[in-house]
Length: 145
Ligand code: ATP
Ligand code: MG
Image (cartoon, rainbow, N blue to C red; front, side, top):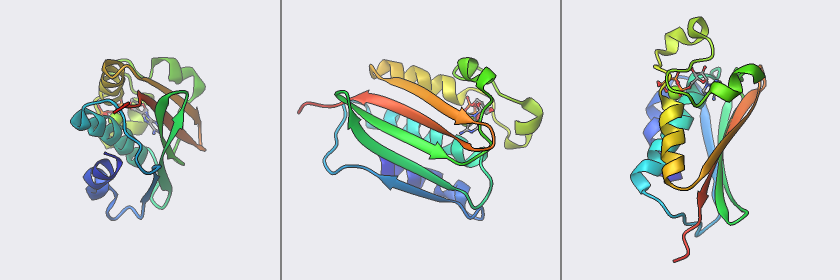
């Protein structure tokens, strides 16, 4: 799922001198719909690309934590002011319309992500610092098969 998601956004990072690195423990499996899991990661990766400068790295790191798979998407982009974090997952919410106008987004991506994560019985949270970057962490229940 991680590899498919990265391949799916690879067109966006061409000519931007950006790299997406990933790490996932062998055999880590989650309970979920693969198409929807890809949709979650593609949205987070597309944001990481849109709100970062060329030449900065993006990292996807999966691990196991508290009986869940934890997948973190980290960028070294423009970051998000603390005051905006509580509303970030609302429909149509965008931090700065003027700043992000050229990226042409609608402000729906993260609300869809949150909805899909909830449907999986998972959680999502964000840590961010303006000028330093953002990390979105998705927790999805492990599969026990
Ligand atoms: P779209 O509907 O095309 O995804 P969008 O990217 O503007 O449009 P969201 O993905 O919901 O909408 O993100 C909401 C807002 O959160 C963005 O407009 C941006 O201001 C901020 N944001 C999201 N991800 C990041 C990130 N990785 N770094 C900095 N800001 C971000
Ligand atoms: Mg988006």
